[in-house]
Length: 109
Image 1 (cartoon, rainbow, N blue to C red):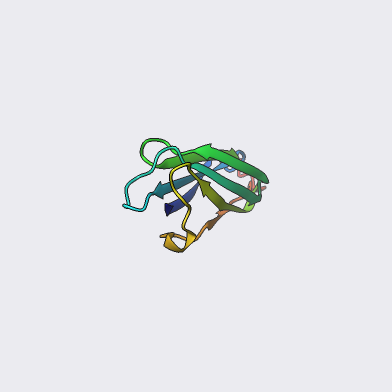
Image 2 (cartoon, rainbow, N blue to C red):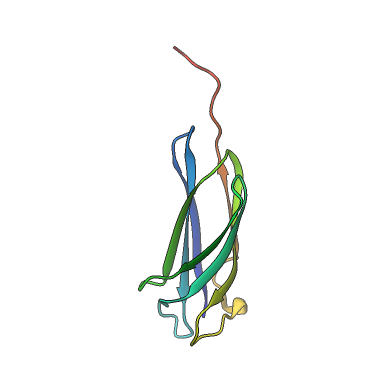
């Protein structure tokens, strides 16, 4: 199995931003793979670990509240009882970084 896709986007408001990460996993036949434990880590504007299982579409989605600045999510591993993680088959890098804007101090009122 391999990491098929890794996307991240910024959500929320400037005062209360969040980052949403979506991980997609496929098996050796390039089919979506459910039941995969995705191990990951956030760093930068949020520090924390992730251990989530893919749904029937082979996806894990995680959203966390963050501080302004750079936020990076890194896939550390994929685990499944019937498949072996093959990092060389990944279709994407295992890390993604997004920039989260800060609160403007300019008040025009």
